[in-house]
Length: 452
Image 1 (spheres, helix red, strand yellow):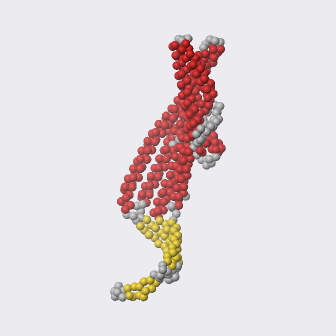
Image 2 (cartoon, helix red, strand yellow):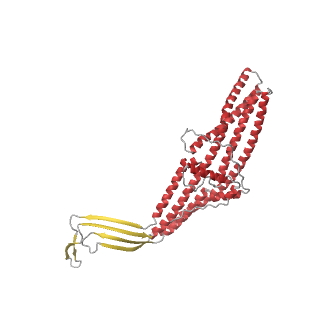
Image 3 (cartoon, one colour):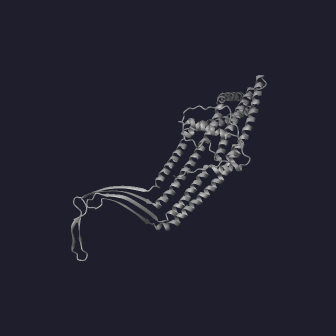
């Protein structure tokens, strides 16, 4: 799980997306600041700029040609301006950017939860395959030998054809089931390597645990799990944040209806020697109003309301789907537990039959064909039991995903494998405590990204 969280490409993509949203939020904060503009210019010409005046009444020249500017002039200014409407809109956009960060975090949670869920399922399936790998190769050769002997007996007509065909059918059916079960389990190694972002074909070894983790009791009332799911599923929380973003868009639309007030002040310098003052300060205020925004507002309001209706419908659809997933995941977990008990009992019974058949073969009271048949059936029963135990772990991971419970600690800032491994181990120990599902319903997570 630690390797998947650190190296899985999908998880890394979501981490990078979250980082981009954080950078966008930092950038949005700068839009709240006033504008400070520094300007410098140099102007030159080949001769003096001069002019004369003419009387409008008499048409006669009333002033000798003169100049009031040097040939080469250097100017500079530093102006501070503050636009109140831009400040209000920038504040709203910064609040929206803060919610975009939360949306990215929920996307990261969703992808990480799915990756951890897939890792858990693939790991236990691979473990189940590891436990029966050695015996499978040995028994496969034995079955092939038995099938060859059956074919020889059929060709020489040494026995009745019907019992031979029934025996061959049983062997082939068991062999097909063994191969199918083992193929399903062994493919999990490839999937597990993909989740850890290992190179294709790169070998690795599994640390096979001695025993399966103990089962967890579910709460008596599924309403508790439904409440937890509706409170913490990343899909629903993402829609809630999008609703908040859309509500901020309403504020932005109202702000655009207001007139804009711009206040400014600045320091200026001009190298023109004809000026009485080469340095001076300016200050002032300006009011402007885009009247077309008044006619544009109804159309924009309709767009915002339509978006709100879409988000409400999406929230309702997700709510119904999530409640269904909780019920399905709970039923699958209970069914998986029952399947483990049944396949375990079947496996124990088949082992006793196999042992009794071996003892009978030792004293020559049964045939070798019967021994092979029972050994094959024992391996089939073991594979079924191992597959059922892997399905329990998958069902448990599906149940945690259905209620939105993070299988990994979300407050870990380090990506070192040792730190992630220890944090995951502590998290899973906590999730394995008795009545943990009822405790989960008492937690109410909150997420806010405050503005400075």
